[in-house]
Amino acid sequence: MKTFFLSGICLLVFSLKLNSQIKSYQLSYYFSINEVNSELNFKRLDSLNDLAGKAALTIKISGYTDFLSTSNYNKILSEKRADAVKAYLVKLSNASKISIQSCSGMGEVNSKETQDVLGEPAQRRVDLMIREEASRKKISQHQNTVQDKPANPEPPKTINELEKGETLTIEGLTFVPGRHALTPEAEPVIKEVLKTLLDHPELKVEIQGHICCLADEVDGLDFDNGERKLSENRAKAVYDYLIKNGVSKSRLYYKGFGHSHPKILIETSPEEEQMNRRVEIKILEN
Image (cartoon, rainbow, N blue to C red; front, side, top):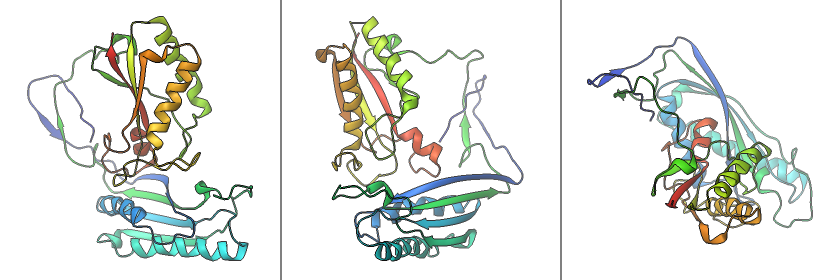
C-alpha cells in the first residue's frame, strides 16, 4: 500500500478515477523437474483472484520446459503445466472476470542444451501475459489515508547520511531473476556504494537481501548453485564485491531475509515484484 502525504492537519481519503485504463505485464511461475501441479505456484496465483475483483483480466498462458528428456515428452509436459495453471484459474472465485485468451505448451523452444544434469531451471516455467482493463482505478488497491506532507520534501538520505540503525534500499541494485548475479545495469550502482564506503571508513554496515513472491518459503531457490538461500546469496554477492575492491571485511556483515520483510505483501505485477526483490544497507556503526 502506498501512502501519500499532503500539507495540513486533517487526514483525507480519496480516489482517482481513470476510464478505460489498460495495463499489460508478464508473470512467471517456475517448476521443479517433471513437476506439473505446484502448490507453491497455485498459492501465488491466488493474488490474481484479488486483482480480478478490481479489474477484468485477459490472460495468455504459455508453458515451457528445459532440454531434459525428449522433445516429444517436453512438449507434452509443457502443455500439462499450462493446463494445470489454467485449471486453477478457472476455479477461482473471481474467475468470471478472467478471460483465458490462449493456453499452450511450447516445449523446450527456448532451452539451450548443456552438460548440466540439473538442466535449466529458468526454462521450467509457465508465463502469464496479463492484460488488465479497469473501468476505474484507485491510486491504491484500497482507499489510502492521506497524511501531512512537507511543502518541500527532503531528498532521500545517502548511505553516509544515515544514523546508526537506519536502513536504506539501494535503488537500481538489481539481479538476474532466480540468480545472485547482478544485472549490467547494476554496475554503476554498486560502484557508487563502494565509493561511499571507501570515502567513509568509519561506517560499518549490514547488507540485507530480500526476494519477491515466495511468502511460504524460508528463501528462494538460487539457480546458480541449487541452494534455497537466494536472498542471502545476493547479499553475499554484494559483500564479496566490496571486499574484493578494498573494503575491510571487519566493516561488513550480510544477511538474507527471504520474503519476510516485503514492501508489497502480495505482488500482482513485475513492478511490485521488483520492489520486494531488493538489497538494503543498514548502518551498524558510524
